[in-house]
Image 1 (cartoon, rainbow, N blue to C red):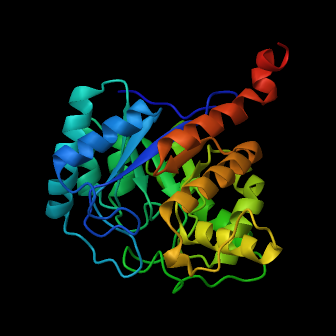
Image 2 (cartoon, one colour):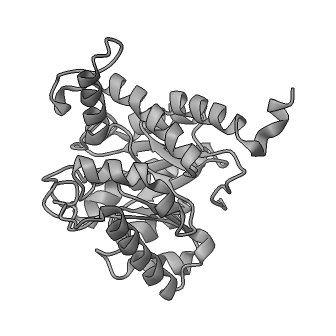
Image 3 (tube, helix red, strand yellow):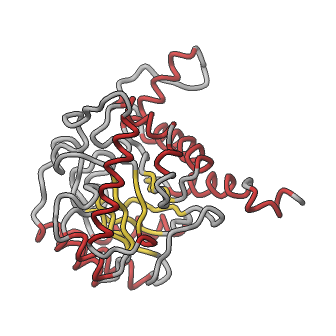
Length: 302
């Protein structure tokens, strides 16, 4: 199916995360069979997902690279199953491998979400250009094994400036390969090659990333920085929120609620595409936020 990124005046997009991996940080092992994966896709679509983001390789800290054959074995049956049941729902393939992207696109995916910003496989930009698909270029550094760690989280006095510059390099590289500018979205890479302060800076200064001129795709859902935000509120004296638990002990329910808040703030800053684990609360909150924008002023006039 054809897919276009939403403009500022259009309803924000919600991408439901579908990790068909045994080792992803949040839901690894939950959807490794095709049947359970498609059932989860059905749930997310019923809750308002505009697209399903299918991934077959974990990028958690210390993750081992997955051979292309194994990654294809994980994702292709799921993509086929989704496409055969829901022709109107977009499918995104979350991969850093051109071979996997090409096969997924041939089976009905229309978006390639590359967490390396297309830096790990030199053939990826060419594959996407030939397919004419949409692409998500995420900011990260390093390899699949270490991009979600702090190993490459070394920045100077202006970390957001470095993130913007490196994203712009990715954008220019894929355009030189033939990817049309209208097909590109950029992702600040919350939690990837960033310490908590770097990720928070990217969120607070999101307008600098939006200034690149491309739709902003945000994937903060359930990340460590979300748990750190929850822990931070514990220091405010508030009895209504916060926890003294270590980040890895903060549960998904709390992370999901906090993700909603972060996404709404990012929406009002200008982000329009949100990748989430729990679709329904984000769909409801983002639709409410959209209804309160000047572009939807008819509602305000009632």
